[in-house]
Image (cartoon, rainbow, N blue to C red; front, top):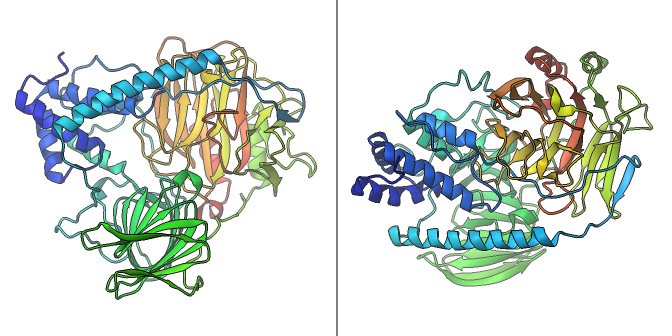
Length: 621
């Protein structure tokens, strides 16, 4: 089938609307127009899918969009013919040697890089640049208008929302969340997933624009903004109390009511009134908070902003520095200055000047550390795990002197692997904490898993992430291959990827057989957002012919594996806390506990029982 629409008018419409779709800027009327074009032409449908495929490929040099995502988009199109879908794109992993079982604590030695791999990367980047420039020029010639930042609008046309609620253009499909912040999806298997219209598919694209998630909420009454609530671009009003948000970029903002915050994107917000404090880690560098007639751009810092009812703003840098600009009525900069730690500057639009004032600091909200509540473990829970007969069971407490012991025997004890002199793995109060740092650090096993992928298996653990950065919790790979792009399983938190999913989802990747070209593999993504500072029960199950992901006792989805090459022979090793020792390491930050690996598939009832044996107050606070 010709991927380009034969109708010239349809092609011109798609050339204008598709760039706005992928940039998240379609209006309701444009949504309806796009749906109309696609419903009347199969060629337009194919052109649409290929455009999305190309767009996602250009965002990342390492692969293509996930085949499951393309299949799901195809299913939403009326009378879409099968065939012609691109190859499955499975998230890549770069080279690293498999660890050996020399000791329980091991220091990593630096490894020389491969010249051949380096030249391949250079050539790939050059090719990507050429193609990307070509596509960019084509898009610019078709749609020369600038794309302004889109803010959600209310049905009435006003860009406001009712008290203590957030404006969103997708309220009808916002998945209900539990008190632990993860969506309860029930049984969402491939075989019984409900059919969706194409129009809803477009709306679901808008749902991916979640800009932040609520990680703390201390307000009076039922405000509608609770822990785990996903926030799309729009206006958040607080009558009282405080709310702490983590933006998808990684920035953390504490808002104190009465206040009004306009969320623009994962990288920017405008404080209309009230007080806010922002902490911006390195990965969110450049996060911006606007105030009336002012723009504050982070330069690696923590800073506070207070806006008075009269519109006068004061900005105080608590650590680091910011670039502060005074804006004119046309939105352009009149003047700017660098503001450093312990300095406070007032912005008064009436005088059109920046004025240094006395530092106060105490009138700004405090960004709270995440709750350090431990799992309420019991002998009954531990006995239930042992009864299920895992290969290994790491509780990180032992008899008080050996947190690395396997509860199930003398083999498969934990081993700490760290680079240099870093001490970024700590064992305390019966949990393991993975700290932030630049050096490689992970846990592995003193023994390999023999024939691990030749039969069903289960990976089960509890995690409490510190943030929503893209990070790997656990991955398994064959010891016979030096190239660990052959990871057969990866369980991770996904935020910034080229695939289609909600930001901050939990992902299970199963690649079998392990293949360097990433052409074999399936993904399962959880709906909803993993909430920083909250405990989550994660279970990945590989049965004879399928994979399943369970979050907090609920099955998120079941995906049937291809009938060919289901099993990969050989022995496997696994890594906990990061993906690789170098490059895109995807280091997990936070706590883990109660890690168990089974040589068989746990049943849904067993998984639910394990979750329910942990008292609910540890996941609800």
